Image (cartoon, rainbow, N blue to C red; front, top):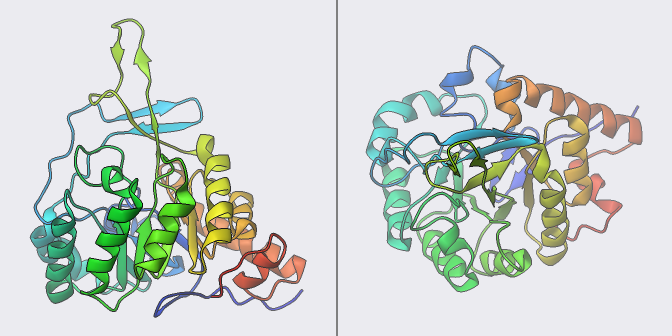
Length: 309
């Protein structure tokens, strides 16, 4: 077997391995500390942080589906000051890279939140949520317009030298145009995909199962959609692509890496098996050694990935 180097570079940040946990599925880390070794993570993407606290949407806001789950959490979080006071002291000492998921209603919200966190709660970098389908303002409403994606990326780039990762929505006609806009405006990477808009109906009471009517579909059902998005985006941009959507086991993560992803995030699987990330990293490593792949970049040679790590 060959030697495999699992390290990944995103902008100025070097992650110890490509396996991270997706925002919104892992809280702020402490919720899982008794369940897995957090040093085994390449990156922890925090629950979304907005400038002010948010209570989120009304319940019910999570529903299981035949091949995944629907959620409509609505970016419930403690806000930037609560994050600094309650979450940052724990996160700053973790043995893995910690990326703050940044959210807001307007571009100015994103800028003010980043400025506050830069000063009061500095961590490894930022994943910018321009793709949440469960809020009335911001999120997907911004992320479906290349011009607005470029504007928010450009404004955030002025305010930090840390890695900026733009999280893309699959609920668009051409995801590559959004990715290109982020790259040209200064993003260090893009992550794709966020959830797809979905709905389930209670036939007995003749009303939607979620309080908001529709929500975001995640889990195994969206694996092929995520793979196609990563493949298309990785052909269109030269910055790293972080793949997520439906990864439940190592083979799914390997497919994302072969499709062009430089790193992956595990989301819904954390709810099923908190040790999923460890199994997936072990599977990636075994596959790489068995196939004679020396680095993550070597995964990209088969399908023509353009980006350089």
